Length: 206
Image 1 (cartoon, rainbow, N blue to C red):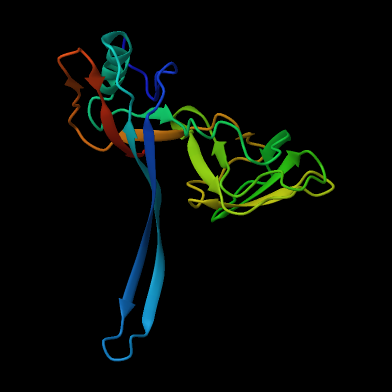
Image 2 (tube, helix red, strand yellow):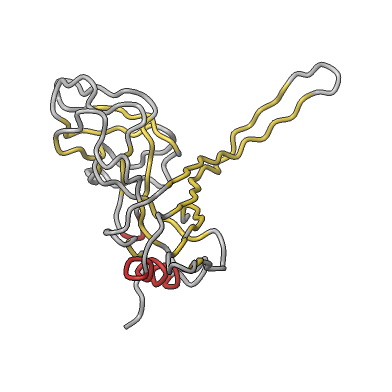
């Protein structure tokens, strides 16, 4: 049976370390005479990550090896989230939805939250838009309160990848991003005690 992407990371495998990096493309030039700077923010923003798994015996490790080989280098895509932040720091209640189509930029206008709630989301919370190959992961940049109608505007990183549909669902728990491996090589180690060591790097799939 053909492999269908994206593939989910093995649910039973924990992460020993997850190093997440936010990349932004900003051009800057400075006058050699005055030091005055000109700064331009380009559209490029994305996530990168390095994943280290705990030492494992073969029964667990082979699940991960097979998962990595399914990626066929940088060809395939997979879903992975921050397993240390599966729930928001904020209240996060209600049925949050995108409020209005054609949205762009670094703000997301939403509704459907529990009304009149301080800290419905907190700075640093993750939100997810889309599913499958349209999955997108965003970081909340400021504390968010809902108004008396359950509306809230959220400052996010990165900018919206595409304009989400009106009333599209917003996930605040067990959020994931869409990734691909950073390299076409798949490598792992096995020591004399048959303990596997596995690390890999990945970049947001755009």
